[in-house]
Amino acid sequence: MAFLGLAVVPLLIVGLILIGQTYQAQTQGAFLLQRETAARLSSQVQSFFQGQESQLRMLIQIGDLLHQQPDRQELIVSIFHSRQSGIDRLILLDAGGRTLVDHSRVNLHQDSSFPSRKDLELLLFPLSSGETLYSPIRIDALSGEPLMIMAVPIVVLETGKLEGMLVADVRLKAVWDLVASIRPGKKGESFIVDPENRIIAHSNPSVVLRETRFDQSIGDGIQLGQSGEKAVLVSQGIAVGIQHFRVFVESPVSEALALTMQTVRVMLIIVAVVLLLSGGLGTLMVRQIIRPIENIAAAARAINAGDLSCRVIIKSRDELGVLASAFNGMTAQLEALIRDLENRVAERTAKLAAANHELEAFSYTVSHDLRAPLRHINGYVDLLTSSCRTDLGERGLRYLGNIAFSARQMRELIDDLLSFSRVGRVKMRQEAVEMNLVLQEALAIAQEACVGRAVEWSIGKMPMVRGDSVLLRQVWVNLLENAVKFTQSKEFARIEVGCSEQEEGIVFFVADNGAGFDMEYADKLFEVFQRLHPDAEFEGTGIGLAIVRRIIERHGGRAWAEGELDRGAKFSFLLPMPKVDT
Image (cartoon, rainbow, N blue to C red; front, top):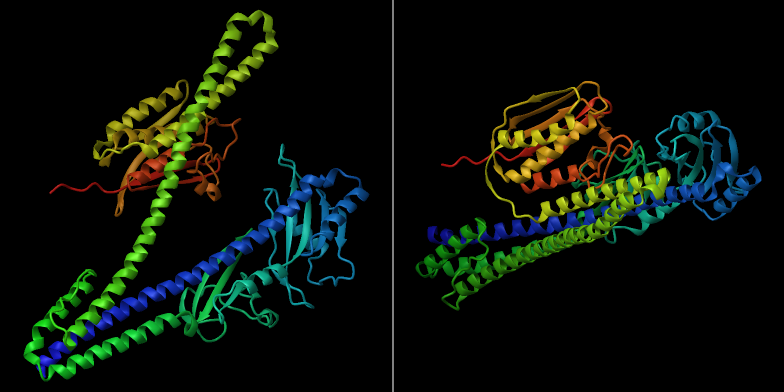
C-alpha cells in the first residue's frame, strides 16, 4: 500500500495544481470580461454627459444668446429645445440672475423637486471658473426617471467675466437605455449608483422605481450582488463635474464561471480516471510503476516551479502510458493557453512601441522640415531691416520686429520638439554619475538668467547615481531654469535643491517660492504643450517638463510636482538606488 500511495499521491497533486491554475486563469478571464463591459458602459455614459454639455455650449457660442433681442432669444432657445428630447426645461439667466428665457415642454408635468429660484441662484452664481455645474440626481415623482440640472456659464473669453448662465433640466432616460443595452451575458445586470448610494439606472427599471440602494464602497470580487445572489461583481467610477457615480456590472456565478466550472469538472474527471487506472494496476505491478511514477512526480514539481515545458517520457503503451499521455496533454493545453496569452501581450506591446516610434519619427521629421522656412523668414527680415530701413518707416520696422519675434518663438518650439524626440531615440548610457558635478554644470547655465536679481540659492550635497550624465544634466537644467523663470516676479527669490533617500530609491527636488500652480492641474504639467500660465506672464513652449519626465522614466524612475498658487512649487524625481558591486 505504501508503494500504491507513492503512485497515487503525486498524480493527485499534479491534478489539483492544474485545476487550481486553470480555475484561477479562467476566473481572471471572467473578471476581465466584466471589467471591459463596465469600462464600455462608463465610457458611453461619460460621452452622454459630454455630448449634452457640448450641445449647450454650441447653443451659447453659435446663438450668441445674450446679445440678441428678447424675442430672438426666445426663438433660438425654442428651436434648440424642440430638437432635444432629453431636456425638460431651459433657462437663460443674465449676470445679475434675471431670467431672460424660461422654456418648458408643453403639457409636461413640472417636477416639483426642480430647485426654487432662490436655490438656483445659490447653486449657480458663485461659479466663476467657467466650468459646467452638474447637480445631484433627483427622481421624477411621476415617471421615476432620474433628472439632473446642468448649468453652463456664459463667460467672456478675453476677460473671463461671467455674463450669464444657461441652465438645462436634463432627463437621464438615455442613460437607462445605455444601461439596458450593455449587459454581461444573459442573466447579468448593469446599474449605476449615485453618491447617496441610490441606484439611478438599472437594466431592470423597476429596481430604480423601488428606490433601491447599493453601497458604493463594495469592491470587486465574488460576493452577493444587487440581485441578492452570489455574483461576479466589478465596478468603475465616473466623475461628472463634482458628482461621482459608480458603474456596477454583475453576473451570477453560475453564468460568469460556467466555462470555468465545466473545465474543472472535466479535469476532475480526467484526474479521477487517471488515479483509478493507476490505483487498480498499482496493486498488481507495484515494482514496474515505481520509476514512472517518480518521473511523473518530478514533472509535477517542475510544473509547480513554473517549467510548463516539462513532459513525462512515455516508454510503454499500457495504462501507465495512457496516464502519462493524459498528464502531458493537460500540461500542453495549459502551456498553450499561457503561451497564447503571452503572445497577445507581446503583440500589443510591439504595436505600442511601433506607434511610439512612428510618432517620434514624425515629430523629428516635421521639426526638421520647418527649420528651412524659418531660416528664409529670418533672412528676409534681416535683409529688409538692413537695406530698406528708411523706406519701411517706424511702423514697418515694428512689423518686422514682430515677425522676427514670432520666428524666434517658432524656432524655440522646434528646438524643444527636436530635443523631446531625441530623448526618446538616443541610446542611453549606464555609468556612475557624480550628481554634484552634473548639478554644478546645470546651475552655471541657469544662473546666467539671474543677473541683476536677488536670488538665494540653497544647494544640498548630492549622492552618486547610475545613469546617463548628459540626460541627467538636461533634467537639472530644465528644472532649474523653470524655477528661475517662475520666480522672476518675486522681489526676493529663493530656490532650494536637495535630495533624500527612501526605500524605493533617491528623491531629488527643486523647490522655489515663485508663482506656483493649482494642484488640480498637477497631472498636466508633464504633458507636451501643457502650460498653466499665459505667455504674457511667463514665456515657454510647454515641452521642458515633458522632457524631464521622459528622461527620468527611461532611467526607471518617476517625476511629480507639488505646489500652491503664489506660494511656490516643488518638482521632484526619483531614481532607483544604485546597485552596489560585490
